[in-house]
Structures are given as C-alpha cells and as structure tokens.
Length: 289
Image 1 (cartoon, rainbow, N blue to C red):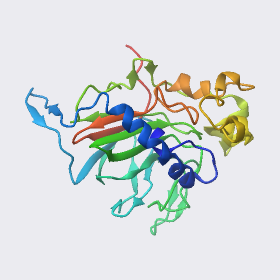
Image 2 (image 1 turned 135 degrees about the vertical axis):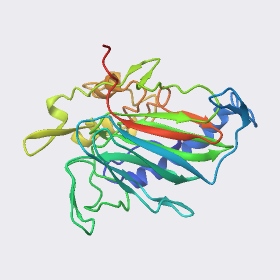
Image 3 (image 1 turned 90 degrees about the horizontal axis):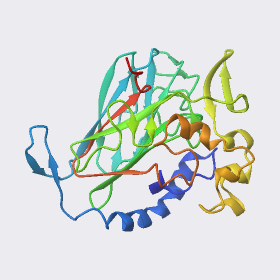
Image 4 (image 1 turned 60 degrees about the vertical axis):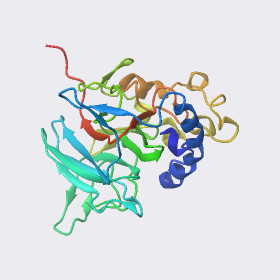
C-alpha cells in the first residue's frame, strides 16, 4: 500500500508499514488533481447524498472458499484501535466488523487453525502469535487487505498486497463512496480477474506435506535486489523485469490489481472518498458457465 511507504524488512512488518507513511504526501498531492473538496455519493435508487465520513465503517468479510477461514486484523493505534481482531468465517459465510474511522491497518485470512476455549492455538498460515484475537501482524505469507481510512481530506487509501506472498485469493469492493468501484463483484478489474497463484517450487511453503502458501522472493531469498533495499531502494532501481527471475509476475498474474512488489504503486493503490464501507471477499473469480 503506497500510503504506508516501501516494504523493506519482511521480518518486521509493522516497522515496514510505518516506514511507508512518508510516501503519503506525494499521493495526496496527486489525488488533489482529481478529487474535489466536496463530493456526492449516489444511492441505489439514484438519490444523491453528501459524502461525509462516519464515526465508524463497516467491513464485511465473505468466504467463497471451501475451507474455514479465521479472519484477522491488526489492532491499529489509539484512538482508532479495533477491540475485536479475530473472526471465524465458515465456507459460504459472511461477517461484518465495525472499524473506527482513521484506522490504519490490515486484514488477512488464516487457515488450518486450532484454538482452545481461551483463544490460544496455532494456524498453518497467517498465524498471529498463536492467539485468536490478534495483537499485531501475522506470519507471512499472507494476502493482505490494507487500509488507511480518512488518511487525508476525507480520502481512504486501500489495496490488496502480496508483497510478502499469498495464502488466499482476496479482493476488495467498496460501497457508498464517490465514483465507480474499480473492482467488480466477481473480483475483476480492467487488467484482469482474480485467479489462483501458480507458485513456483522455489517459493512454495508447506505444512503437513501440503502447500499452504506462496512466499515472495524477498522472503525466500532475502537479497537487496528482491527486497528493493540498498542500491535497489527506489522505483527506478527496483524493477522486477531486471530481476534474475521476475517472481513478482507470479502474483501479478493471479491478481493484476494487487501489489506484487514494494514499488507496484501505479496499478495497486486505490482511493475512496466519502462514507465508504467495504467488502473483502476470499475467493476466485467464478468461471463462466
């Protein structure tokens, strides 16, 4: 997510997220060229209403997968801090969470989880310290839905990130805000639809003999080249087409609208103006009948 600064340290995701905050003013300046100070949102019956932010938002999680998903959230920071950060989502299920305005954090799905009555346990992917109610970020690889709500001038910034890898297909829809949603309800954008990650053997993460995720080249190899560090720590220098192997393309082919490496900003950062609510869908674009 470009509002959070480049991702340069896979093992310290919270520090990496905070480091990316420095990029926000540039994005905001660009957005002023296209976003008016006031805007209107249109309801389903065609009635225009003034778009204003709420004290809290609604984010609905939908599970189109055939397995149970334990949704997780990073708490954020006071005063925009979430008190509930874990939910169980059975196949075909949906849950809605209230999220405070100005929240800056991420959601992700955990798989293969087992928790006792006290909420202590473990997940095969996306685990967050062995607890059901997360207190920080999760283990990689995990596909992330990242948000910075009302970050500037009533604008939300949000994205899907596979910078550290992927464990589940995921796409985001927005509601009530101004403008057209760039992702349709089936998980398709102008660039393509949501497909399964075809993970090369070098990036596969396994548990119990089964593949449970696909880690990024940065996480797997840890080099400055793949992690966009050192002399590669700029958008011009960190170009996957000049990598030894373009591993970013593995994730971009699966979700063309998602971050596939640290500087994948142009096609991956989205904004919403007004009282925006969201839906996060875990699943693939349905195949045509």
